[in-house]
Amino acid sequence: MPGKTAGVAAALVTGPELLKQASLYYHTLRHLRPVQFHARLRSRLYRPQASVVRPLPAACAHAGRWMAPPRRPASQWGPASFTFLNETRALTSPADWNRPDWDKLWLYNAHYFDDLNAVGSEERRTWHALLMARWVAENPVGHGNGWEPYPTSLRIVNWVKWALAGNPLESAWEHSLAVQARWLRRHIEWHLLGNHLFANAKALVFAGLFFEGEDAGAWLARGLRILRRQVAEQILRDGGHFELSPMYHAIILGDLLDLVNAAGAWPGRLPADTVAQWRDTAARMLHWLGAMVHPDGGIAFFNDAAFGIAPEHAQLLSYAERLGIAPFAGTGPTPVTHFRHSGYLRLERHPAVALLDVAPVGPDYLPGHAHADTLSFELSLFGQRVVVNTGTSCYGSGPDRQRQRGTAAHSTVEVGGADSSEVWESFRVARRARPFGLQVRHLGAAVEVACAHDGYRRLRGRPVHRRQWRLTDDYLRVNDTVEGRIRGEALARYHLHPAVAASGDGPQGMLRLADGRLVRWCVWKGTARVVASTWHPEFGRSVPCQCIEVRFDGPHASIEFSWR
Image (cartoon, rainbow, N blue to C red; front, side):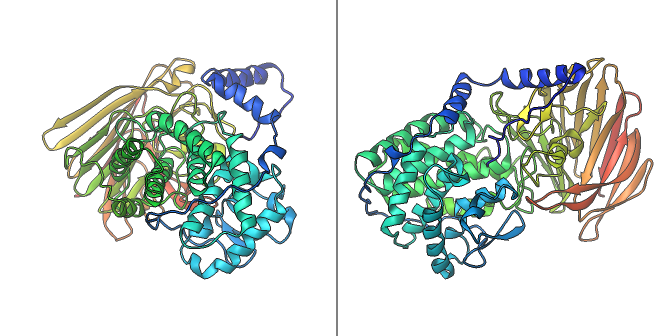
């Protein structure tokens, strides 16, 4: 996703504010890799153009079979009308591709060309052809949002997919496609790494397969070299993507399945051992994602996550089956699924599913999509979401983004009004929480998980948050302890899904689920109240909901949700 390249606005600050800002920069920058520094400088200074506009390489006919990938919802409603991020606008002039008064993420989506392969795209071929011709004419090489590496990468893949679906590209579009690939090869996002680098490499592979000749061979070789290292680094041994966001995990899994699909469309062009590695990795990723979705089929909201951006789990599972890939079987059904390398647990005792975050915020050098959500959790009962994290509705710099990344927006504990990890700006993290002391125990009919984190040790009194979950067939009890002196107050929050209606204040109350079932909540330690909150299931969308807020009684707070 875009936005991570946005700079930090300069500000005139003095005294304590200057020291605070210096601390944020130091604790953010000290984790970066050297390549991220010099690649950022190079990306600002290096702007080759003439060298990428050369004669068109020949297209390479695909002899194999291209399987239909998952389809996104339609986003184009007329020749120039589009809905992205729940906002509809019209691109009526060349300047609209780069309107400074429009949200940058919305504009990026306009440059992706996702609608070429969306639901019902066959009925919009005439619009798509007009749009591609417009894009080529109105976006000169190297200028504007559309030539930033991430939208360039997604657009290359979408144009190639469109051609594979039986839509011939005109010569001007093929020439532009080759120019875009040449440009991308010189603008790899080494300064960002992560999912951006993965998207760059995937696009080079697609372009290298679509064309043939010296240029195409160079794109293909470069893309494969990057992927060879990035698949091994980004996909952890338990199958989770290392940025620790279920949404980005699903995006990368879709990318990997597309690469396997492309290998079948151009048989013999890719090394067999590479394709075998992709297939094995995709199987592990499917297993991970299957455990990180709720019974409703949607992803859990840990770190940056929202619906409508990545393919759904069911779509990816069906796509993998068409490609002959089955999820890694694991060890079979169990009350606890523990992803030791990515740091998540799924607890399941009928009718409850609890998803627990005992993970670090992400790779030290790449925490851009991290939230201050350590030791948060989500709970479903009877197939319905009950306790949630509040999701993500925006990527722009501002108070909404800061609030949604903050600890108070998650079902965990806030100490002294501070975030457990120092999230700041749109995609930055300074000092970050690290979990420790994880214990998982089976106690007869109960499963008990305990963990702590050190994110608040930077505060005066060096407090430590410890949390314990105890799940049975009848209840979930959450016990919290804050060790050390607390300046201010400690609050545990339990954000509720909008379909859940909460009643009661003080020690106990009821939750009415969407189907009318009742769940009792009871606070054993602390003082509770029900307050207003918001849930952000999609970009550009905010839904009112409720939150049970528990103020600590000394160092302790405890709540129980029971359903029998």
